[in-house]
Length: 73
Image 1: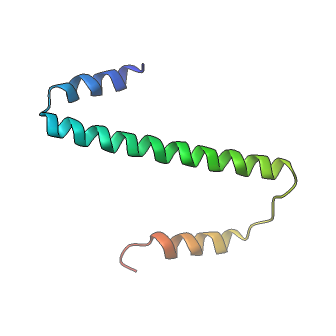
Image 2 (image 1 turned 45 degrees about the horizontal axis):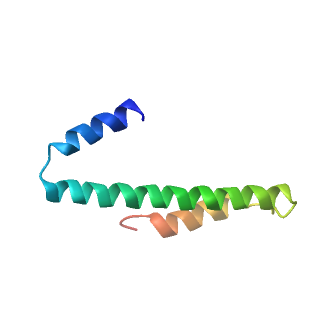
């Protein structure tokens, strides 16, 4: 295991049980999200390698991202 993760687990073990449970749930959720993203990336790579890629309009991509994630706009 990575030293940073081992340190985090050691420190978490000293927290109250409720806090440990919350941390565990949050960590599992984050791990699941990362696994889903990796799977989606792998599918995208396979599709690209199979010639299914399409040119992107980077300005449109940026505009969509801003519309989706902009705060206070």
